[in-house]
Image (cartoon, rainbow, N blue to C red):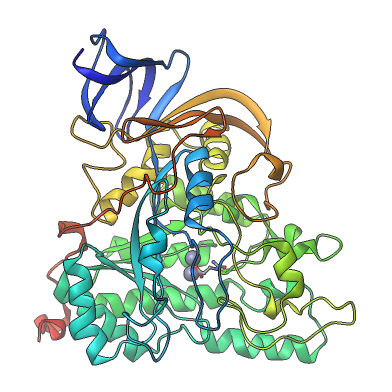
Length: 492
Ligand code: URP
Ligand code: ZN
Ligand code: ZN
Ligand code: ZN
């Protein structure tokens, strides 16, 4: 036949529409869509199933090595198995830069490790030390190699940048046509709150949230957008947790600023309640920005619905609960030195930040979004893959069902009801913060570049079968051409 594989009889959902069609796949690429396509060498029935593009998780931390030696406990092999099992066929993780080091000398061997991935992958380059050498030589070389996005932190020691350093990164990105993503929280405000909380003897996991309330995120989001506007550099604000920050993004977008907002399932499903579990289990829900009050969820959904938050990622972090309980000092994403508590558990500020969610991201979004009627299927596709593909230079290849695109597909059983359970997940972490959450809708089959990668929970894709996604120039990463007074400082 004409096709290596035909996915037959499914209800297809793209970012634009929902329609019935067969999908003909040849050489890992979608070759044809239509009714009654000719037989393929292999056939998969999608009767009664919904077929979406494979997920693109544009923010996850896999096997990342911190400057102090902390290693995220998720390997490329386990993390990508979990990704595929949850319907994510490609992801973008992070190349670290250690402060005081060149890019080349930071986390040596990391790109080699990534070759063990079963899913397709790319990198954002973290910039913690934008020296002239790094920005004028190493970053241009990186962009040449197809690594076309930078990530900066406005908080965390030793990752954070000053405003001056951030401006330098923005200006370099602008010249190179690279995209910039930003972690927005005010470092000094958090430090001041932590000091006061510890002094008051308030050390529980819940106090992690008290150390960084919404105003801390709102201020940094406002500042990041203002500086990006000054340089005319497109940015995405990472992991927006609250309306305060989302409103800053919406206001800037209304002015025509090229700023986008990302959120994560934890910010519309988890809350302060999860930080208050017995036996220190609140530590399982420590992430930054922090979880908010339950009442915040409806406001996040409204910002998803109005398009302000148009990408949902996992921000997957590989820290087990067992590790969190032993946390004794600063960690890759911890904040400051640890005060030990009488019960031997670490104070909130020593708990490693971040939750594991690479496998549950899409089932939770499908269930809470599509099954509960908050979003339609095309919106689900935009949030889970299509918008990230546009933002990060993968449009046409990922997040699409159009002929010519990679044949990355998820066959969803929209009626399957289950509860999320650690024992059925494929990640290397010892818990999920969504334990026991009832979900409706689950991936039956995940296809990555025309190969069946997961079937009914069994991962068939081998380590090393994922490919590095090199990204070329694209319009969305370029400035709008509008700078204050017409003086383009970044062009010099
Ligand atoms: O708590 C989080 N999100 N930790 C991971 C690092 C980051 O800030 O994205
Ligand atoms: Zn972050
Ligand atoms: Zn509360
Ligand atoms: Zn992150």
